[in-house]
Length: 537
Image (cartoon, rainbow, N blue to C red):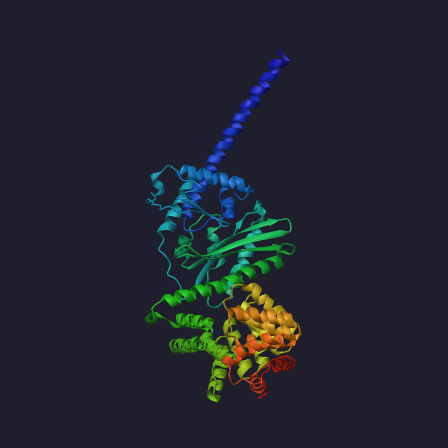
């Protein structure tokens, strides 16, 4: 019988052997993670790889500390003879992630028959080889996008349904935008669980833009990270993160999908405008001319608005029933009227109304066309009922359209419903916080606050609008009235002088004649302008 000491020594020896095996296993796992991290960085060298992405790929979605990730990145740097100071090969982008920046030469991949592979591995390799050799699909004429399945970072495979449902809702929301070509779910989801290069996805699906992202749920909170990439060159176009409470799953899907889609659509349009501006003027189709016209409208000057009108007429000459072009002509005339840049003749007013009505006839399923046309009918035909019905339809077609919500808010202002207007304007700004024309919505918020006699908020919003649109007459008038009612007369008179530089012949009577505001709002504005010193006329 062994002595107690002998047994104790044996147990200690077994423990040391187990510890050595665990250390060896940990080392192998550490080495595999370093290798996987390097491979992932090389494969996605066209972009910055976030920590969430690394967690999903290298650690399978398990929660790991920043220190663990940093240690693996350091190990990768050592393996490729780099360091944190030089960062010649792997660069850290503060608050965003890391990127492999060295040049990489890719050798041709031999066919699977060259190796002795398991049948499942051979099949996967064969599929990958076929996809690499597949002929690229041509890009559609209009902007095109594919939404890839989002990565589930929750650590629970059962949560895949939530991420998949969210992507389906985003695809559905984007599909409501008529000028977007959106790849169907069945094609997008063939990439689920695969690590792919977005440029390869773009070639295989024939799209210019690819949206990818991740979802992480914890208790009653959900975090969604998304990024939009130009699949032609791998350049990031847009990225954002959304946090929300996850009490009602359907409400949560609607909220996040609406926020994602609401920001992607205007970002794609801005990118397309930049692309159209780079193209030769002799190589522009109707859509490119429309994009250039929108870019001119964003400049918000008398010259740029007239240039936009020229471009829009050229677009209609190419495509005679182009609803968006006709509607934008009406919108340009609305801007000219508000700014008093040009006095429209009766014939031009009649033509503007005709363009607005034609846009409605040609674009009954296009929310943007309905929005722009509704303003033309409101201002020039004084037809509040039709304008309101058109916006109702626009929101029915695309409830995530910041443009439609902003237009709905403007109509609320004209209908004497300022509190409803404030809510609608705030929703528009939430859906599209980076809108280059958000100065219009901020001016609308100024008007709505003026209507409820919240003069301080009215002046604040008018000032924000003027910081984005420095010569916007509507914002100036509201700021003059708000400052006058606040007894800030020096400030009111300063802005009145600025306004009269734009509109030297302006009087209260002349402005009242052209205004479409509700009577109670009109009265507050008139009193403020009168206090500041604007003549009656």
